[in-house]
Every structure is written in structure tokens, then in C-alpha cells.
Image (cartoon, rainbow, N blue to C red; front, side, top):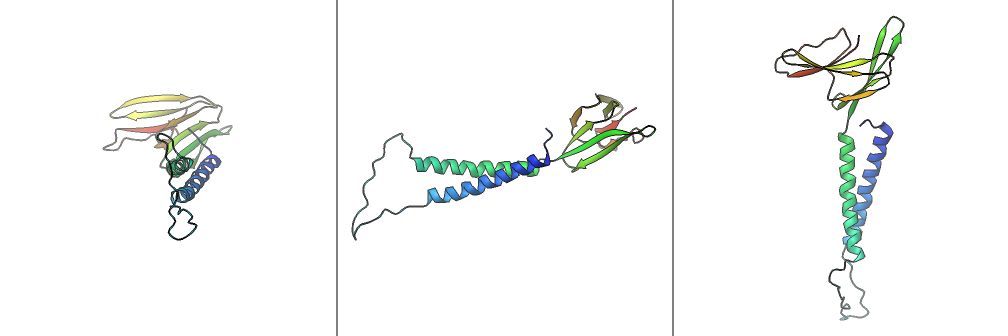
Amino acid sequence: MLISETTRDLVLATGLTAAAVGLVFSVVYKSPRKPRRRFKGDRPPAVARIPGKVSPRVIAARISNLAVIAGIASALWVRRYREQVVIVTDAGADKGLTTEALGRDDGRWWIVNRSSHPVRIEKLLYPSARDAKEIPPGVSLGVDHVDAIGPDHQPELKPGEVYTYWLTWD
């Protein structure tokens, strides 16, 4: 799933706000309340509890705890979620295609084909097998990673590698 930077920032801000508000309400609803005494020696009134009925204070405390957990979890997910975008475009009459890499190197890779030609992602398997997927113009495809880009940069499997990905075109 390719998400924009604005969406990522919005989810992060909402998650942190939910965690902060939930933490404040959690403290407020769990703080002990002392009953008001009219004079010295007066005992607080007895409180009758109905079995099976949950008070609104308990419900609010549970919701605030849930907001803290959900807010922290969403903030961590957004901070951990990373992606690399490779945009393939037409370069000109004689130059062929060009690529532009955006994002970070340690996440999921998305290949966006904005050119007028199809491109393909080839998975080179050890020892000499190939698995190729064609990406038509105007389509994007997500892969684990891309090791080499371009028809002139065919990768070689290094010792210990089982497979490598190669983005190429004709």
C-alpha cells in the first residue's frame, strides 16, 4: 500500500494526540476521590453496587487506556512503515527511459511506470532461473527490494544470495 507523506504525518499526529489525551483521562479517572465530610468523624455514605452494571467512570477509564494503546501502536507503525518509490519516465527521443528513486532504502519498494513503454521486474534465482513480471504503462507494482536498475546494469548473484531483483526494459 503506497501512502502519501501527508497521510503518514496525519496518522502519526493523531496517534500521538490520542495517546496523550488517553493518558490524561486515564490519570483523571483513576485518581482516588475522597468523599466530602460535613464534620469530623462523619463517615462517607454507603454506595450500593448493582451486580453486572459498569459505572461510567470505569467505561471512561477503559476507553482512555485503549486510546493510549491504539495511539502508541499507530505511531509506532507509521514510524516503522517505510517505502522506496522508483518512478520510470520517458527521457526523450533518443535517451530511452529514466528512473527517479524517492524515499528510504530499507522498506518496501514500489515501481511506478509513468513512461509510454512497458518495463519488467526480473527475479534472478540461484543458479540461473528467472521470474519476470511486466509492468505496463501507467501501472505500479510493489516488490521486496530492487538491487539493480536499467538494462545496462544486470546484477550478478553474490555468494550466499538466493535471489536478486532487477528492474529493466527493452
